[in-house]
Image (tube, rainbow over all chains, first blue to last red; front, side, top):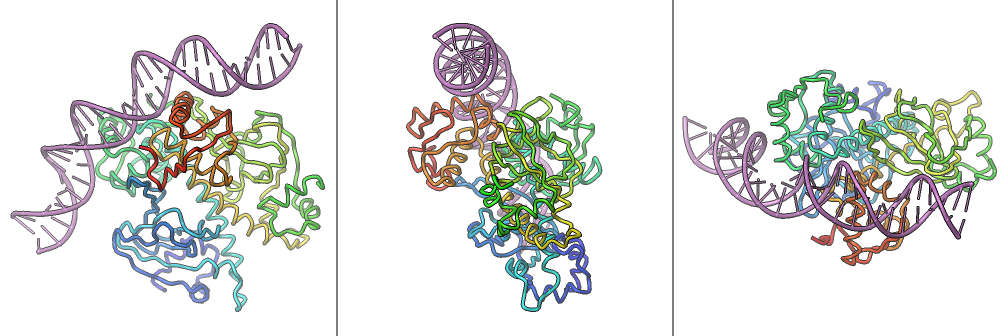
Length: 231
Length: 231
DNA sequence: ATAGTTCTGTTGAATTTTCAACAAAATGGA
DNA sequence: TCCATTTTGTTGAAAATTCAACAGAACTAT
């Protein structure tokens, strides 16, 4: 477990927990680690919501397939972030999404019961973990607010620019990578891939952005949401 | 406070708290009640995220206006439900939504600090409240999953049917009221109002549903999401 | 290096949405 | 009850999206 120390330090679930206590705590929580190949479905839709997942390396994709096979991406989860905690905390019988490895990934699982129920050892950290879960869930709610703000826009262009502005703001620069390929970005923005490619081309020709693969550069303070945003 | 007892009993924030302790607890938490007229903006966008709101009567609308004045409705909050708790728990400086009274409404506010920080009286209920908040936030996350599932559909018809199916399932009947008027429903589904009216007419003519004002009846097990859903 | 596979950008046609405008219906007060 | 206001349904035109198909680029594995 030593080798994941840097991950644990940044993990919202463990914030405020003393490094020295981590190992005993993880043992007490019955944490298990597993490795998954790229594209492996870690938790298929319908799985019981019993475990909180922690990405130790790689990345996973929270997605949903409709009856036609169209994929909707809810979020990407990067190292040190957690997933499926909402289903676990709400105690849902079967989760409404799939969790898929975006690349080879190491994942740690903790049974939520071990977190919520104070154990026989009277470990002192349960209350801290619950507070951390509460804070994390509040942040996740904000994340969904942003996602809804993005996909509630009526055109592909507006969705894309709103997304890129959020990404730019959160990374603190005008030039940044995004964690999606084209199809992935389309599935996150909930639009058609070819229409998205077309729109990116147009924006490039209009001098509003530059892009190369999954690297984007915004060329104007295109604050779609305050300056008036380019028609 | 006595007259709100039934509300408090059903409020997710207070679940598991003994009736007899409610009054002292609310005093200790510094809970304040205020009444707002229909259409009054209870918390404008940009307000500090300091308070958790509890709807005692009436209903409020969590909404967002874009630069063109288009309204997006995130959710309706009914009596005994709470709102703005995610902003409070995440400690955001300014909330990204407005909270508007949908009708004359009585609202109770509690400063989140009073909940999170154990007070000088060493009140025993802080841990219970934090657990309740955690659970509530997990449920809110599920609510947003449903909302995203709805608005990620590509056509107005699919959005509407997906929404009505959720509503039907959650109310446990095929005939039910929804908490929106036409414009409100359009703003929740993130579509054009006139297009929505048109689609409702079509569905009625096709014998898929009946509707009268905000009362809808689904005439087929239109499980848009499992049976195949009508073209 | 090469062959096969996957990803990305382009195009045109069909479908759907948005927008504006207006009439009919419903609502709320005086 | 009647008037004024708000809400809802309809329509046609313009704009945008989706869909299918394909070619070129990029990537993988041998």
